[in-house]
Image (cartoon, rainbow over all chains, first blue to last red; front, side, top):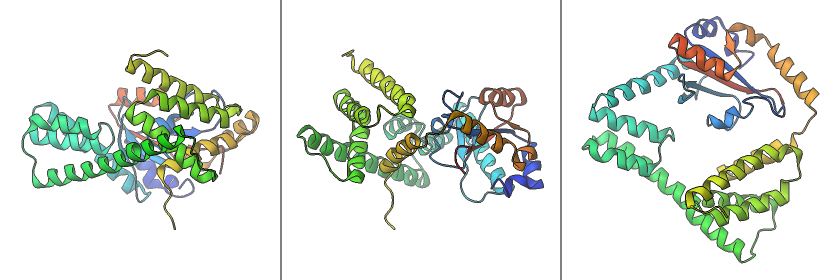
Length: 227
Length: 73
């Protein structure tokens, strides 16, 4: 892409209409905003998105990497902003679409979506279809995070732990996910202790574990315990 | 091909990050090389996050963000 789409005259023209932000993850220790990719929902490179002036991700770019396709993603972001304005003005159908769009973007969870939709009236067939799809997504997520994680946490508490490295990684990752989803402080502490034993001595791991300790403190505060 | 579970991807990302240790000097050199690439000169890229937010606010514009890396090709 850097040797192609980003070098074209069309891209140069596209760039004149927007603020162009280039973020380079360097892995230089202590470098400002080096972890920004993860904070914006990126899970790999390259990651392209459109943000507002608060840094909220309004649209992620997927598909063709051409100036024309980038412009379409900006258009999608603009539509989201317009929808927000209409919803704020009391337009109930727009309010439904806005809530559905935020849930699709991960800005609210399914439970919050359901609450928001209650006072907004009946859904159209298209909106209902979108709602049902999000409900299915939530069910899959719940099943993976809660049911599988609960089973693995039970196994771990009985000392039943996989020996294959790949299975061990998956096992502990489901336990972490379960602990976070259910806000189970004890299980999260157990997961963190395991991770520290395995990776805690690595010099690059310090920021990661600081973030996890912070998460644990927040979970404890929410649960009303400081232990 | 068997799909890779997101959970595994998250753990793998951590492991990769931990294994990608290199000296600070090497990382600085790689960043410099990245910033000298031709594409950087083809648009008025802002590389500071706070400055990009400010520019968007001042110009009432949206931000088009490109996330890339310098530590690896």
